[in-house]
Image (cartoon, rainbow, N blue to C red):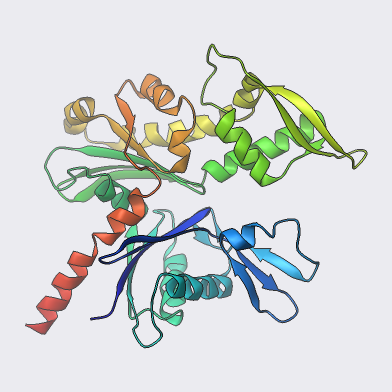
Length: 331
């Protein structure tokens, strides 16, 4: 039997779960190419190390943008590398389950399937990320009682309510952690004439930013390049400034949660009051975000264990459905 892989093809990070071995790969979803020869130079963290340091003919590609395939050919080549790094053999075509955003169009889904097949997979199954996240978080989605998951990744935010094994209602926005990073970069350029890298913006988000103002004001020194002089420089900023700068995006994430709740049948209200909302995805770790969502929705909110891996763990459990289908075909 061919090896089976579950893939969380994230905007920021790609994770792979191999049957019987667990998570075997966590790498940034980035690839470095020589633009002259089209040769792959590096993938993942090695490619990330090349950011800002590569010669002009070397280019860095991020084939996934906001949960969608932005470049089919590069996605295909990245999947080939991913399968190889995860342990797939050329003569042993793997079965693959890939988590995709709910907002992914049928054209984009077809592109992902084709890219995975060309990259060497024998069978490709797509599962919506919110469903995979709910399964990976261990929520009782097969029960008659409603469960709600909010997956806040780098490229998208997905809110969904499940019951009896299916999605009752769902809402998606293509806003996530990457949007917040870009907003922080824009803020420093606009207010301080300071150009900072995306990596620095992400550090500001992790170390300084929050979903709402708290009592602990923090001042940090942020280094970058002065856009006027071109020289390296540093500025001192307050946490409250960053919180205010990203407040609109945080509001849109919360509005996605509210829109999902507004579509839910009234009969599920008691279940959601009892069970609350579960957050997953890297951006779920934004400071004070659970408290902010709880205040806005008046429901209990908590972050699941291991929030960054829930999608790939949940996708991996789809293997049993593939096996069941193959068993039925064989009978």
